[in-house]
Length: 124
Length: 483
Image (cartoon, rainbow over all chains, first blue to last red):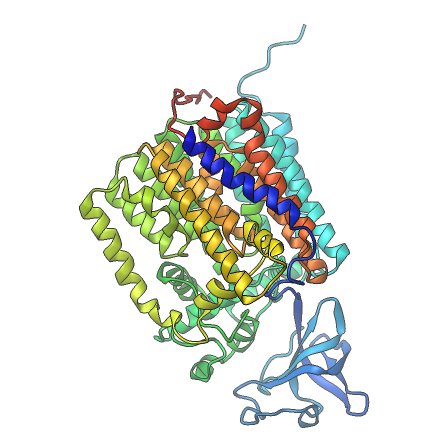
């Protein structure tokens, strides 16, 4: 019975002190909590003044994405920009096949713009 | 005057429950599981409905009201059907059924990535696929992080997208050899296929159900209890829906439980080693496993684990170590740990270290008590394992919903309402997906209710009943298997 009481005391301690610990814990978690989605297609238009990319998917729908400071620019290892380190929006041209990653809750803003090899099939 | 009911007639409540659950699982396939209050609450609402239905079935199972071969056949068939239903979860929810079927075909053929990055809020599966690819190329999967230039040559065809979908690509893989074996086999069947990986994991999940049935039989407990595992919405969501490799861990633990109950120590030891080589968490059960093994098998177990984990040493070293990152910095939905941080006034390296040390001490002392209570019987193994794994969850800084599957088989054998209920309560943690913030009141609700459910029934029944929760079993074994 003594052993059980010890275990119970441990549990009780955990429960009771937990009640004191209400409030936001640490301002969030360290895990990735943003649900993101990918969209592939060809660049239909780039507006460098407005920092906007128009993406045409395989089913011929055109979507608009805002490129912001936080948008990561990357290139597939077999794409034209593979050797470049600091890629900018100015390096992309219309007709290139790209994949855009965006937050599901902010579908108008690109989180990542990645150049794909030119032979990549564009599917949304 | 009505005729007496035939004993073989199907239970209408069961049929209604199965039909309703299937409808909800189908609905889940059409749900866009993204951030925000509405999507998250909708998803949680559907899970809650599934758990209410599960509760009804569980109640009937625990009361011994679910009898007859017909009813059991329907219930076990439903367990399989629910899993098959949820396999396509992660395909674009707006796709029509025909489009989903086509997407599955494309996925299996390896023509393109048709699944979305998140599969019902989880995305671990991409790491599994990538690890399988790396191992199949003859490269040590623990050597390089996915974004390493050393792996650039593997980025052809669909593998670029799979590689970019990997969570924390700057960290090397954390998964031990048995898990890597599953990834390798899935890759050998169909490289890069999400559905094949999930299918394999569902087979392991169903194997867990099979081993649990065998364990229950060996312990002379009602086979119907296995339905508490088979129909559990958490298990179905995390294995069939999201595809977590923990299915292998659970299957191996269930196999070990059965084999120990059958006094087959060598295969039991091997099964336990598979569990540890899937994820390291079952190491916590070592005191109870060692207590059941003769010296030569203890040495063999230690040798197997040492030799099998040796190639993983690379995963421990350096800043890109996934294992070190997880052990040292991962925090999510912690119970006691979060509470201790709250008491100490929030995060900070010192506070985190102290909280971890206290949690370790709590866990260690609890394990010591449990080991002293272990009477060497199969029932005691289930009971001690349930509490040990449960306490590990309570003290861990990171408690993801699929971790609760580790406790579930033992909770089923022990008929423990508290841990069974935690499979539902843990989903409160998903509220973090609304705005990316983890709130204290959610933790209080989640763990507070768990504590109430763990201890209130025993306390209400008096201290003797409470003692029975941990001590050696003095009651005769329940035998109820009339059909």
